[in-house]
Length: 230
Image 1 (cartoon, one colour):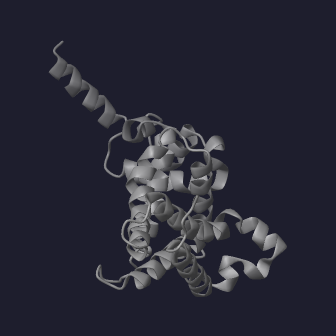
Image 2 (cartoon, rainbow, N blue to C red):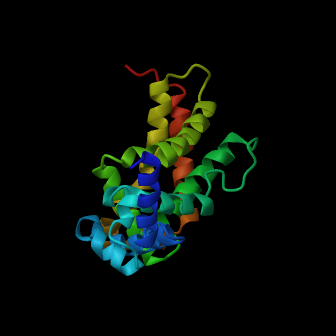
């Protein structure tokens, strides 16, 4: 049997099995989003996801390449939605004053962290945080598509605020300080809620926290303009 004939037969088998029918990939993604959020990545099974999506058990491997890559696809979809809602520029033009762009970036990041109030959004955010702390082999896709490009925006902003010729190390440390200040409200969310609930991001509000982080960052960057290091 020729290679072409084998391919044609295989495609027919796949179609008959309901693996490649229109909408299967979207259904799998939607069901996986809910299932991973409810049960976690380790507990959720491909068979469970396919059953709920009304898809053949081979569909996950066909469309995504396995459960791990399906999870990465869920995170990518989540991050794209967050970025669409809260872009790093927050609607500012590219030639806006650099301080305004820094504040917009901080507001964007904090809005992404606090979310929409939807429990599903918060749970997916927690799964993303867990993936960052213990990345899978496929995490590079997320880093390259979302994390690195968005962080580069902040690095460019900070570099513009520092004197010409500032060391890369200084630029990246300043950018890390901004991000770290924001991430505290996410990574320590449960501890803050228990120990000091009035300091939780959702209680203080994004605008108040953004203003504080912004002013703190301005002071720090100004100080670093004169820092000689060791």
